[in-house]
Image (cartoon, rainbow, N blue to C red; front, side):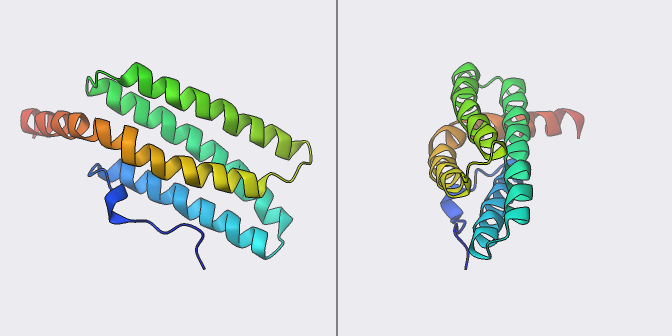
Length: 139
């Protein structure tokens, strides 16, 4: 059974961003399954993958909204920076031997859906306009 279920209202309309969000949800669900099976080796692998991919996603998203001229890019980046510091701290605690799997799963799940519904939805219109303009210009 999945820990998180994607809901249609989470779609931003930006295919690459939606695919990345889906992948993060899949990783959270893999973490949940590994915890349930008491597979520490898989939990360890998924924690590392989840943190690394989340950081990659943030960088990708920030570049995209900056290129689109989104006026709140700096604020969006600041929100990511705060969350990134927390996620990195969780990973360091995990590497030191602390069992943070449940905490990481809950933190990511709660933050992700709230962030998509508010901050990510806010930039989606600007990015979609930028993408349409680029497509019209370059075909």
